[in-house]
Length: 65
Image 1: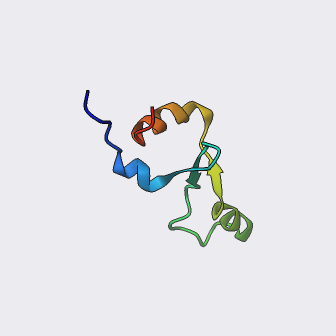
Image 2: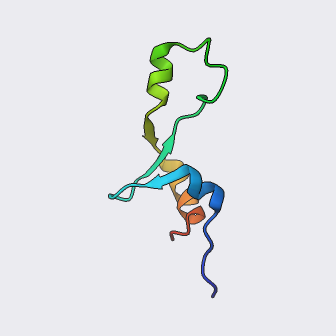
Image 3: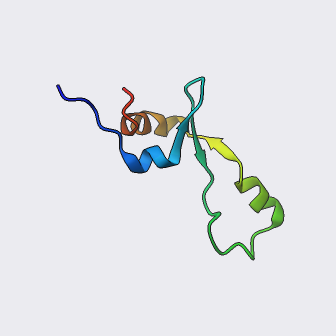
């Protein structure tokens, strides 16, 4: 069986931590920022852990089984 290929779009967006968790950037932080509060924009800079329901599909996209 051939090797699994990494889905490059997923690889650019998702990071794997040392403990194996998947981490992603928060959405809605690219444009139309004037109407968003400073607190909201500040909190969107942080990364967040990927939802448990999405982990299986994303790991497959990263070439992990």
